[in-house]
Length: 78
Image (cartoon, rainbow, N blue to C red):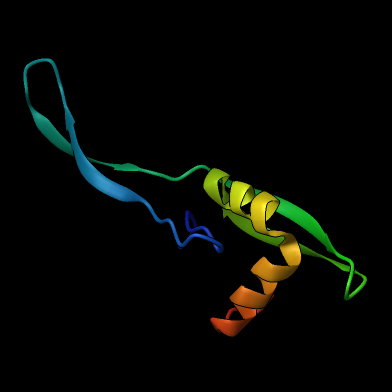
């Protein structure tokens, strides 16, 4: 699961690439995954997450503390 967001769960989408002659071949759309390091002030350490651009916006909106707490509730190791 290389192209998988830890915050939103976004994964690649699959479909067809359609050429000018209308031949169809399979392709995939990968989400915009970034490796971001955030400081957790409550634990005094940094965590590195693989997040999509949408996940970065969610962390900016809700805060890293609440996002990490939700990830731990879901069973992910952070």
